[in-house]
Length: 295
Image: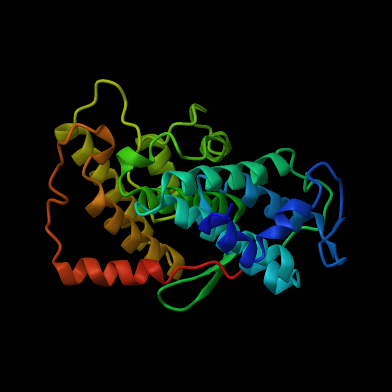
């Protein structure tokens, strides 16, 4: 029987290393497929990426780039193959057989990394930095880094799934809970307006709200929420750093795109009281996209 296309793609891109990946239960440093010792903090990120392959395939590309940079091309190729597998599986043109095979491949990755190596006591990776719209490099605090990680995950998930409605239920609830716990919020794993506003205090690219409180109404709750984002933007503008100035622009773009999509009722609210022009929106989006991790 001929191998399904998705298996050929996976193996051809180096995915065979998945069958011989780092032992998930090993502690401390571990040997890579090339025989080189991988530091514990990198093992942790490598395994975490595999665990989240089904819900956050974008993370696979980021960690693959980090692995390649640190000198682990075999493991980098494995994660790239896994990302390609998810892309094929999520395509409308993919057959039912291919989807089954893709699910099996990502399931193997998740099981293999089910008990990730703890980074406790391991060498700490460099603190993440971002480059602002003014091209200033800024080192993020732990909470800023966590907020950006949650923002990247939810935004990528909505983009991959096509809508908030389709993304619901596929988010990394452990990551949401981690953020909520770190910010003294109700630790329910649901990304609602309180979590979103708290994220906006540390970061700026605030994803569309997934879960609105029971009893809230789009035509009243959404304008209030957007007004709160505008307040955060005004506060950020008063601060001296380039990062806060860029955050202000990101917050306004976040307010513009929030229309209560998480209600799932088909009701949408006008984007802003002061309508932005298409050019303004495009300029903001261009500046937001310039924010990136220098891992």
